[in-house]
Length: 202
Image 1 (spheres, one colour):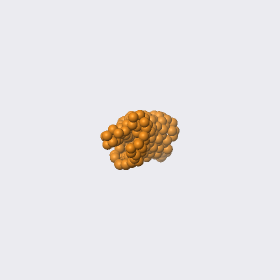
Image 2 (image 1 turned 90 degrees about the vertical axis):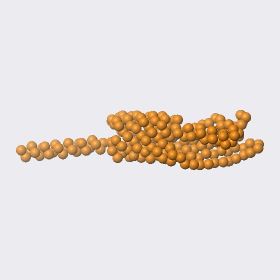
Image 3 (image 1 turned 135 degrees about the vertical axis):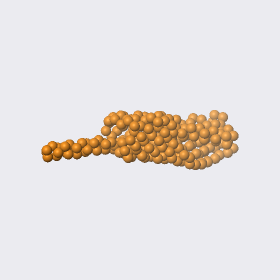
Image 4 (image 1 turned 30 degrees about the vertical axis):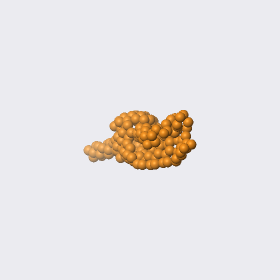
């Protein structure tokens, strides 16, 4: 009887140990880099250009624009298998030629740097596959500059302001093995309506 009791207690302790281990077998740290498209700063840059045209009375046209980003880095710490807390840093830049009569007289630049605390919700976790959602909100530091020179006038102006930015990724799909994972996300915000990236878990 004593042996049976000892065996039952030992079995119970092993079961608890295995259960505790299985609950802790998830990566608590995540670091990722992403590149997206159709971000909030994309739309803000269009508004900036329209505003400048209105201010200058249509003196210049803005042509041959190039937009870099949004490029972002993010970190999340998982307080549980379901919830991760962290932050996203996002950078974007747009450059446009300032033209008049088909001739380039200067350059307009806009840069956007956003820092957004956020949360990630893993609602499906498998060994090599996962589904999740993600949200973040924080300040965007925006800088605009124009440098041009014509026969009648020249200027080298810049301005900066702070606005709020956000990211809501309604659906994230990740796949990988061990520490390295790739992922795509669909949503709305400064990281983009669509984005892809690489993630390291440890």
